[in-house]
Length: 167
Image 1 (cartoon, rainbow, N blue to C red):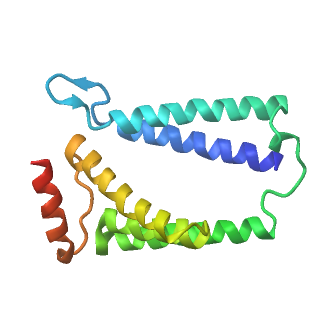
Image 2 (cartoon, one colour; image 1 turned 90 degrees about the horizontal axis):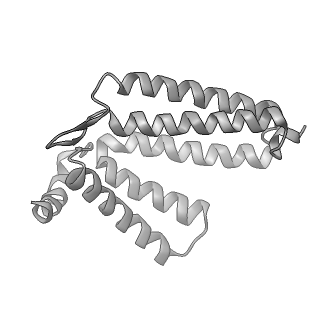
Image 3 (cartoon, one colour; image 1 turned 90 degrees about the vertical axis):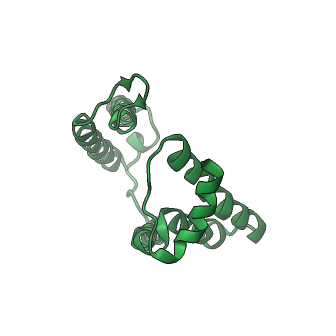
């Protein structure tokens, strides 16, 4: 666990720095009359993630967190099984984006994760699987003006209804 904690913090720190460098190729500040520049959100979220990895490394060094004091393996057989279920679900999510859109893939992933992995009720599952993708649609498409992948043409009528609400 101790080694896993610092390795994970290091990988996340490197990934944060990479994202900060890449997003800094766009404007990361506020553009008058337009709002945040194209790189603002990724840059500042990556900066926050980098700061958090610094805290993880500091706690690891001081041995103040439970993982930094543990000699247990990072993943036991149950942990590996859970990891593979979630990783498989994420791969499925990514594979579905070009077919049924970002929001459709999000709905399918939520059904898989909440109902089948989380074993929650169908009512909660359907509420989350319908409400969250629609909320994210209005956030990204309406508020942020960021277009997400819409998938194949058969999804277009649904998005036309949502665009009518925005515009």
